[in-house]
Image (cartoon, rainbow, N blue to C red; front, side, top):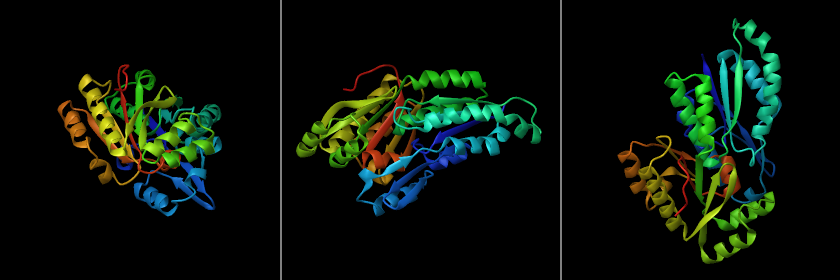
Length: 312
């Protein structure tokens, strides 16, 4: 069975890795004033766009890939190239992508047969829309596992069961760099994940919150003075999780800037050593444009799948 994998461009995985494994993208469109950018996970283009729009980002608008375009992508290509497709989306609590993909799936399943027949395929086509329940680096866990299982010859039902298991047990942690920007963005979106008062106090005292996403719920789990100290704490916590044992041999990192800046942060080298010692593969990438628009440039995120735990 030919198994395909689709992710949206908010998924923080390296573009080269996505391309090498034939993973298809549902792009996100960002509008800042009169400027528009389609996020196709081109790291250089993303950084250049952010640099050229320093002001106005907190009022930017993002647009999920529409249901009609998702339908067209499947009917024009994916129902021919594959027999079963997993579409892995950012948490439905943060984006319309999951809703659009689910809406499109009904039309796809109703209309694929003549398309496949014309291409010479007589077998059925199936797809599964999976809510990763995650954001940023946390969203990368499921596609990596899907590729590993596909390459190992797992069946579609086996992959589906494993992905749904991991979605419930994936975690993302983030240290934002600029709380003033995050406060403005929260106010613009009407988001209550971090209170405006807490953001104001944090900005005044240089206190950085550690934010957390699990099963689609987001909120603060800690506060550290200074961004570098917050990054060091986050790296040390991730290293502790690696030593305690992850549910997949995968750790995802994303950063809202040049990766060399992330790698120079305190605690990074110790995390790398822990991953190497415990045979955990690291995936490092520039944060998606959608991510940087929503939480600010210079933010750091870590994602993994693990048993229940507390941030400490």
